[in-house]
Structure formats: structure tokens, C-alpha cells
Length: 556
Ligand SMILES: Cc1ncc(C[n+]2csc(CCOP(=O)(O)OP(=O)(O)O)c2C)c(N)n1
Image (cartoon, rainbow, N blue to C red):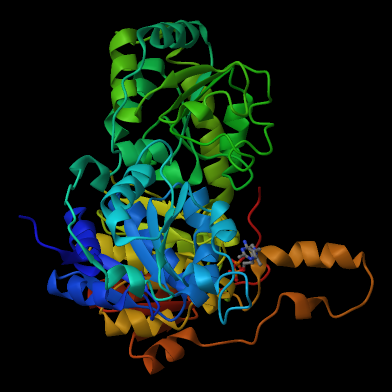
């Protein structure tokens, strides 16, 4: 006869069975479950806000290619949902658990609670209420399945009890069934259809100037070798979305750079000269395509994606291959056979390489600049030089994304580059989560000061849990990317425009020290490499606070 167990034991043992090693949360939620998690060795990282908890789970999921878990009490549910926006846009498999008051409390001005369902609708793929402990086997298993299949993404389970307590304290006879394939990305590796491959090969053979636009889906799939083989076979330049950038070391002769609205301009130029664009494991959203101008809608497009709904979404009529990137590209490479069009080997890639070389030559002087305040280009060049071979770089949004995405070089196959899907302040907590998922790898966060202010208090969390990341702050005391737009809005009129983007000068190194972390302040370019080297060797949470030029603007 089976015996009854508590919901707490069931939840803890299930997430543990799926390989979840950390949970990021704000009290008070699933308290008994947290006790059971402790017994299983799951680290219970109490954070200072629900949004930071969601970002940590997101960083954990993206770096580890596996589901990350965050939790909040009913009153924290809105904060947690806000933190899922980036995971949703970044296709990150985050599980969000919240508590909810019982039905008799609904629709009658209950203290601390609004309806959760609608808030989570916009930021999850799967959003369900757990109303009876007996539902746990089905709903937990489905949550992992939904989070990890198709385009991965966040899921939400709303547990009965405003702390989830009516679920985790209840008892029932419950069956355990861990389905190991849904504990990692990609959960499934669909194979392409032969007819789609043949059409794609025909188009690729006929093209004279093909390019690959490679996104994070290829990294999730582990398709780096297949991307390289395809590019070399086709003599096709490799253009990347920003978070696909670590697919190929940038000293590879076919590597071009990130394309779109936040780009290395050479990538936009090369793409504009192409006659066939092949999106592989990449969104075709406005940012990567510069509002669907690169390539223009109607031009020849190929797409390989694991989610059939993405094929043709923004490029109707695109030749679509429904497949996992690795298995799909392996099959495509086999179908292509030898080099697809030897005649163009010398010309098209050489033209692309010349465009890249010219762009690099243009930024080179700033990358070597001795100017004080320090140029962000110089900061990125020195990070590139000191970046360990197995480092994970986690970049924020705004100018941080552009500086880091275009100028921090990923030169080793073991390096990984992650970036915010657009939420300012994401990178620091996400980097802490990434370090939890990959404790043996150095994790370097690149953040603006405006971004870092959001979750500065999580330095205390990093110290409390000894999560040793290096946070490099591009500290220009302004919302750098906002400046020009704000000034333009004044249309030459006098006024307090600085009030809209300027902060007090702040010494983040000193603040870090006060919170128990290490802090290094850098004001001269010559000090950068030594500071970065020391920080990377410290093995404790450290902030490298770099005073940079406020008037630096990337050329796009
Ligand atoms: C949640 C959120 N709010 C607002 C923005 C708009 N935004 C984008 S970049 C930026 C300024 C960034 O400043 P900072 O982090 O200091 O970096 P810098 O541009 O100076 O390198 C702002 C306000 C955003 N992306 N996300």
C-alpha cells in the first residue's frame, strides 16, 4: 500500500529530481517545501526582491540550459511576474511558484492580493492554479514539459494558500514520475523533413551571397560545430544575434558580428549585401532585423527553428526547416555534401571580411585610448584580453549591450555570452544565477551604473551565499543611452535635461566593500587589466567600478 506524503515533500523531491539545485525567492512562500528542499541539499537563496529572484532563476536557466526556479508569496506575485518579462522574451525556462488565497477570499477586497492569472498571462507559456495537492504530479510534470519544449519559456504555478501553505502542508498518495528529458534544454531534438532539406539545399546552392544569422537557439542546442561546418561549406559569413554571439570565436575568418538595431555596423552592411539570409535558431523580431529592414520582407529567407510557429512569422514564404539546430544542421550538412559553391569561396567571404576589417580599424583607436575618463571601448578591449577561456559574460541592456556585444570579443570556444532581452538591471542578478548554475566557471557581469542601481542590494545576497562573480560597472554617472534622446526632446530649448539622466557620482567599489564584497575602483586606463586580473583571481563577489566617459556613444 502506498503511504501519504505532504505536498511539500512532493514538490521538493520533484524539483530535485529534475536537477534544480537552487531556488531563488522572497519569503513567505512554501515554507514547508523549503524545509524539505534543505534536506535534499537545494540551496535556498533568499533575495531582496522578487524581480531579482526571477532574474537569478533566469540567469541560472540560460547559463545552465536547464529550468531555474523562483518563488514569491501572493503579495509578491506582481513583482515576480515583472521579473519574468526578460525570461519570456529571452526564451528562458523559468518556473515561477506563487501562493494564492483560497476561493472564499476572492473578489472581496482581500488584503494583499490581486488576481494573478492575468498578470502571468503575458509573461508565461503555461499559467495554472494548483488547487488540490492531488494535482501536483500532473501539473508539476507538465510545467517542466512546457518550460523546456518548443521555444522554451517561463511557466507559473499558483499554489493554494497565500504562502502556498494549503498545498504544501496537505497530504495525499502521490506518484513520482521524473521525466529526465524535460530537465534540460533541448528537451527534444526534432529531425527535419527530407523535403524541407532539399528545398533549403536548392536555395543555398543557388545563392551567390548567402549569410547565416545565428541565434541563441544554436547554443542551447550545442550546434556550434554544425554552424561552423555549414558556414565553411557555404563560404557564408556568420552574422549573429547578440545572444548568439558565442557560437563561433570571433577570430574565425567568417565571423562578422551582431546584427540589427544593436549591432556592429559591419554586420548590417554584410547582411544588406547578401542575396539569401538563413536564420538559424534565431528570432526574426524587430531588434535583430532592424525593424524588418535587414533583410527586407519579401527577400529570400531560410529559417531553421525548433518551434514551427516561428517559421515564416515575420518573413512569409520563407523556406522553413522545423528541427533542433544540431540535428537539423547535421542533416543539412550531410545533404549538401561537399563545398556548396566553390566558385564563390574567394569573393563573397573576402568582401565580407574586408567590411569587418574596416569596421575594426575604425574602432581600434578608441579600444587603445588612454583618455581619462576611460573610454568604454577601451574597457571592453581590456576585458577581452583578460577574459578566461571558460568565462561566462552576462551583459545588461542599453549601451551596455552594445558595448559588450560588439566589443567584448569571444575568442575561445569555451566562452559564453548572455545578454538581457531588454530589461535594465537584469544582468547583475542574472549573473549571480548563472554562477549558481556553473559554479566552476568565471562569471563576469557587464553593467551600466543605471542598471546596477536596480539590484545593488543583491551584493549582500552574493556575499551571504558566497556567489563569487566579477561585476564590471561602466560607471559614467548617467543613463548613457538615454542622453541623446532626452536632449533631442528639448529641441534646443533651455531646461533641466540633465535631471532626466544624470546621477550623483557614486563610488560603487566603496559600497561593495561596505556590503562585505570586494571593491576595486579604476580611474585610469592603465590600471584596467591589473584590476580585472585581480578581480578574477579573488574568488569572492567583487565589483570593479570603472569611471568612464559619459559622452561616449556607440556608432550604430
Ligand atoms: C526596465 C527598463 N526601464 C527602462 C529602460 C530604458 N533604458 C534603456 S538603456 C537605459 C539607460 C542605461 O543606462 P546605464 O545602465 O547607466 O548604462 P549606459 O547606457 O550609461 O552604458 C534606459 C533607461 C529599459 N531598457 N528597461
